[in-house]
Figure (cartoon, rainbow, N blue to C red):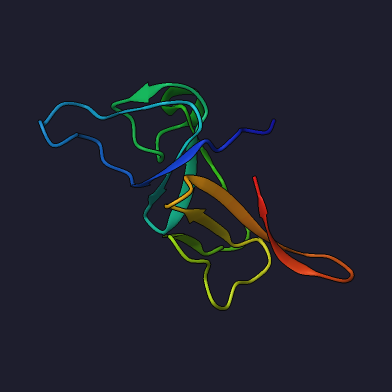
Length: 107
């Protein structure tokens, strides 16, 4: 099953600044303990390490540690599969290589 990443919200936090459980929406992407996860549904109170059936989180990568950059400018030395969230546009890109080109492609 494929899950759409709608926005990168930064590092995972179990609670918001008011001390209440933080709620994530379906498609929210976070970083937690060096890995990236996407919320598969609205979720609150569970870390990405809980089983997916309870937590609502799915690991984005499992075999290669990709780079995930959150900035206004694209990374200088990307590798295939790296992700870049353009914070000024609010859009997520993946770096791809094909037979003739290398480029950032919007997800």
